[in-house]
Each structure stands twice: as structure tokens, then as C-alpha cells.
Length: 252
Image 1 (tube, rainbow, N blue to C red):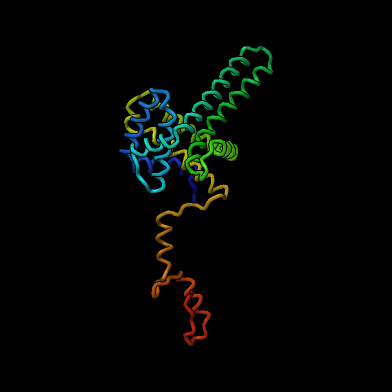
Image 2: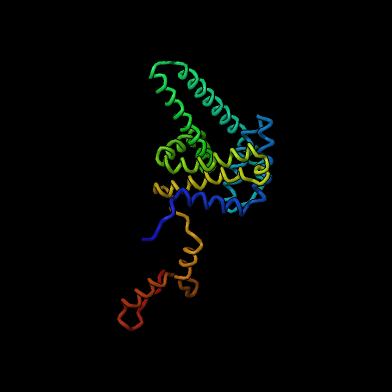
């Protein structure tokens, strides 16, 4: 039986390959992003700019630091709103966890666990929210957040594996400064985008992206005649259906 690599590992592998292909851009973007976080105010715009560059990169356009600045300016106010929403939610979750932790009754423990789970769900939602935001025709945060929640709930184990990978890379990059300058942070948005695309394909909402080998095989299966082309297997079928008098009709 032919073994099949789990979808989560395929996403991780493809994200690493994308990161390696754009390693220098990832290094420069990570440096700019890191120093932007120190200003606090420029942190959210830099994050949106980072995702904007990665989104364009996956669509075949390399923008680099110039694209990060462009994306940060383009989504400046929406990014600040996103940052304030996240700050408010995290404060609310933290306060509730502390409050219920001081209650000796059993129900207090249950509510504390519930708030921890809500916090994890919110973090998971953000993992997909920015990729969705960049992909949406109408750039609405509520649409992006809603899609992030639905994707997380629709593929919890898949999401947990990707989140764990992103957490490890993010933690290492923050604790050990060198990986930041090696662009390790760039894998996190790539994981978000690739994970989102994979789930959309799995849910049947978009078609799977063809591999280079599949495109090559498809192209090799076509025959061109006088500026027109059709698949070779269709041509063979048409020939077999004729009466041998050369009455084959070219497709129009």
C-alpha cells in the first residue's frame, strides 16, 4: 500500500521550501518587523505588511521590504484596529483566567479551563485570519475572523500541528535573536497561507493547485494543429469513431 504523507506535514514542507526560495527577503522582512514591534504602534502595520508581501510572493510577485512598507500603509488603520481587538481579547481572557483561578469551587476550575480553551481558539483564529484578510476581495476584518474560526473548528488537529510548529519557530526566534536575522519568522505567515489553501481545497471551496509535473503532463497530452489544440486522447477517440473515409472534424 502506498503511504501518504499527512496534509499537515505537506504544508510544513511546502512552507519551508517557499521560505528557502525567498530566504534573503525573509531575512530583511524579519529584521524590519522585529524593530517595528519595539515601537508598539508600528507593530500591527508591520505585521500586515509582512503578510501582504508573503501573499504577493505566493502569487508570483516579489516585493521585499518595499512591499512591507506599502502593505503597512495600505492597511494601517485596519491593522491598528486588529491590534486593539487582539489586545482587548487577550486582556479579557487573562483577567478571567486569574479570576476563576482564585475560586475554590470546582466550577471555578471548569470556567478557567474554558477560558484557556477560548484563548487558544482566538490564537488559532489569528493564525488564519490575516491570510484570509489578504485573500478576500472585500477587506473586512470580521469576514477574516469568521473564516479563521470556521477553519480552526473544521480542522482542529491539522491546525494544532501547524500552530505547534509556528510556536516553536516563534519562540526560538524571540528567545534567540540570531534566527530572527536568519528570517525564521517568515515561515509563520507561510504556514498560515499554505494551511488556509490546503483546507479550502479539502473543503472543496477551491481547486487544488497543480504541480509542475501535472502541468507538464497535461501540456504533453495536447496536439496543436493550425493554431488549435486538443487533447490527444480526444483525437484518438474521434479517429476511432470515423468510418475510415477521413471524415474527422476538427474541434471548433
